[in-house]
Length: 167
Ligand code: FES
Ligand code: FES
Image 1 (spheres, rainbow, N blue to C red):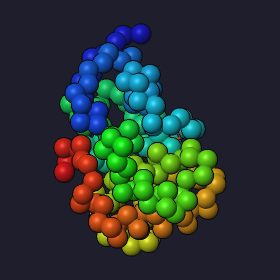
Image 2 (image 1 turned 180 degrees about the vertical axis):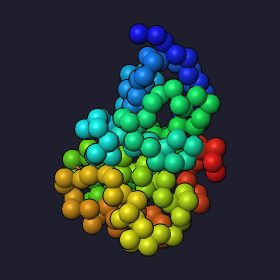
Image 3 (image 1 turned 60 degrees about the horizontal axis):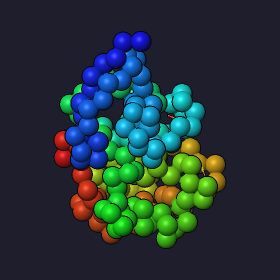
Image 4 (image 1 turned 90 degrees about the horizontal axis):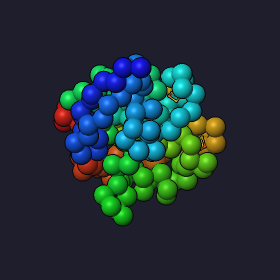
C-alpha cells in the first residue's frame, strides 16, 4: 500500500509520519504517533469514544481520513492536562463520578472541550446535544452532564489549553 507523508500538530507538537493511503486518523494516532488516548470502540462512527479535535472541532477519528490532517492541529486527551495538573474538565469528571469503566471518557472529554471552547456557558440542553454522539453504558449520562456544567461554571472554557488554530 502506498505511503503518504503527513505533517500535523499533535497536542502542540509538530509531528510528521508516513501513513498508509486511506488510513483513518484513529489508527494513525494510536499506531503511528503512539497516542493511545483516543479509544477504539465501534470503528463505525456510532460510539464516539474515538473523538478528537481537529482545528478545535470534534471529529470521530475512526471515520476521519488521516490525509486530511496535513497542516492541521489535532488535540487528544493526552494533551488536556498540564503535566500533573489535570484540566478542569478532568477534575470535574472525577468530582462527579462521571467516569466509571472509563471507556467513553476520552471521547466525552474531547466533545465537552469542543463545546466549552466555543460556548463557555452552555445550557443543559446544549451539553446534551454536544455529547449526543458519545455513548456511555455505565453512568446514565447525568454525572457527565453535571461535570461539564460544573467545568463551565468554573470558567474552564477560557482557561483551557488550546492547540486548535481555529482559536
Ligand atoms: S470508534 Fe469511532 S465512533 Fe466508535
Ligand atoms: S464510564 Fe463506562 S462507558 Fe462511560
